[in-house]
Image (tube, rainbow, N blue to C red; front, side, top):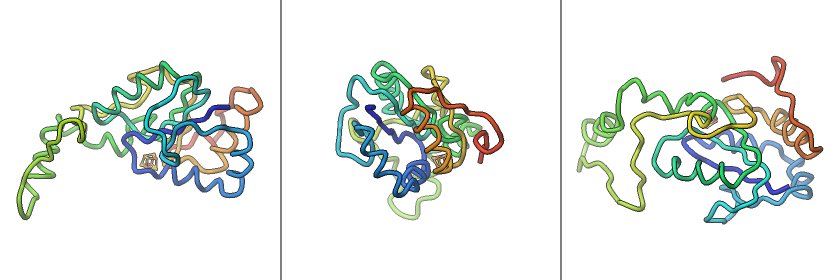
Length: 178
Ligand code: SF4
């Protein structure tokens, strides 16, 4: 299985939970080829990915561009954690109305010295006005909730996929937000 993990607008807590798989990561590494991830040094999302775990919501233009590429190149997309599924923490800025209001508050109004909004075209991607969960931009195949999803639940989903089965996301233990 060609496995990818992607870090969009999230705190990396979902990836930390993935690392909580501990020694099972050794078993997993024997069964998958990790082709793209914050854990590996690959710059371009490759073609022919079987499964991707997507952490985080769509919060900037780089996320928007990448998620379309991911959809084109991936068989199974898993919305990995509450930010990917609902927007969660990343979407808390949505009621403020626009990215500009958030930037003004963060970098101008509350600055002690040298107030300025970071601007580096091609390096710092512009924020989108409204943070979106992944499924509002591209089709999602599997939803794995949690903030973050627990390591046992991540393992259960990956084990099903490795057996060629669709994971059963049912019951209080796995359908658990927060
Ligand atoms: Fe962080 Fe929770 Fe969002 Fe995962 S779901 S990226 S742990 S805030």
